[in-house]
Length: 122
Length: 469
Image (tube, rainbow over all chains, first blue to last red; front, top):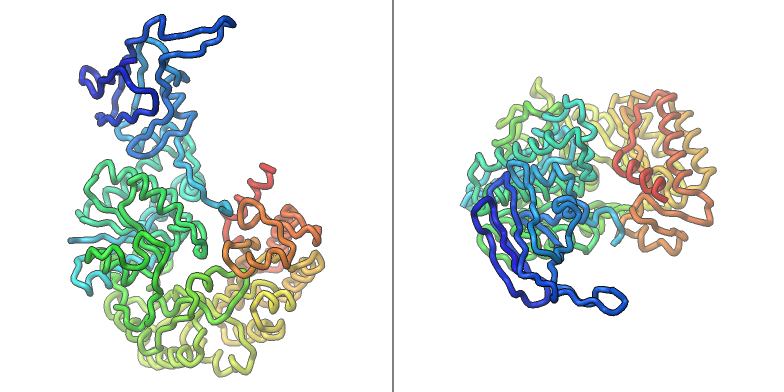
């Protein structure tokens, strides 16, 4: 796969032909902002299906974690950010909209909590 | 290198926070310019007229983000950051009094690291742990790992903050839960409140720390696990500070921040004598409020009550249980006769008294609950005078306390949070204890006492946990 991350016309990140495994991408953006993630370099033979019709191999990007200035997004907030599509096995675009004037305001708006083991016995 | 010491909002108390003022004094004595800011009171005052005050408070206590208060909370975070950055500090020392300050610390640090990434943030105070006696430093470590803070200091911070400013990061307590207690409180500089605006406080008083730790060893208490040795300041040392604060701020009311004022009877009596002498010479008299342990009448004779009256003392008595055998067994070695003596003396000498009560202690039975209700019904003559308040707290099993270690002995089965536990043999459920708390509050009210649950959040959390179950 190839990934290109843009903020308007500004390229924040560009990369392709990744090794399998986790990849950290850090970007600096201006708030408020809309980020476009362009996915490409996927071809029909990148998806292997067995005789039973089950996908046994697929070239894809899976969005596992998003942190805003080290503040991790809760799963439901992350899913909301990308319209519930975190499995990117396609050529196309994903948009992330950060609508507030700063990240802290946006996290509040999204009701994203910082997970804290607080009152428990551990 | 300038440092700003700042209390983190979320304590929701109208009283001044002491830590920034004492830390400022320590830093300045060592040659580091410092400022002390009590942001807690600024936010308490800001939200007190907000129609959604209680919802905002839930953000501080439980990180509840409600649609109605998102803008207010965002404004509070930005206000606090702007206040902090207006001092242009190189280092920010955030003081967390309790775990109730934790959520706001996260959000504030998150915003500060965005708008001023070069600002070095160090957090400290007992609130950087969930429970003071717990070894676990997960909150502070979590924030440090997430780069929301740079460092943390645990335990007595007066010397460690100075070593931190000197760059000695290997000093005990810095980024570690291994800390050193101050050996002599008398050697510390006097708190510097010159940056505080005392007109902000409803209850204008100067906080003063006269001791740390306790002379008693109550099994439910985690303070004695934290400060294992009782430390006290001499009467002369305390009185010298009182005089400095009076001269500087013109305030003669003092709030003792401690576990008990009368731990060392010799020094305490001497302090009373010094205050009496002062009060006899000045129309603007000294008054004070502090925790106070009940002793027998020979240790607190009538002449002693006269002294308390002449010093305008207001006492907070931790009686915990009015069931004598329960109370003595938990570590408070005084009789019900002693309590009655204290109430009678306090009434005779017009000494206001607050009673602190643990509701549903693990060794209390349903019969004890009934006894307690009756005990208060029979003492309605003390309502308002001298008992100005009865503060009730649900019994909690705090980690690393004697009570925690006695769980097997008492047959306690712990739940998820300290106020959720069971003693199956007693057949008293958590719901029973909450019901008892509400009944007791009602009886107190009907008997004329002013009564409040001591920790609304723990009650609310317990109720929420029960509903979840």
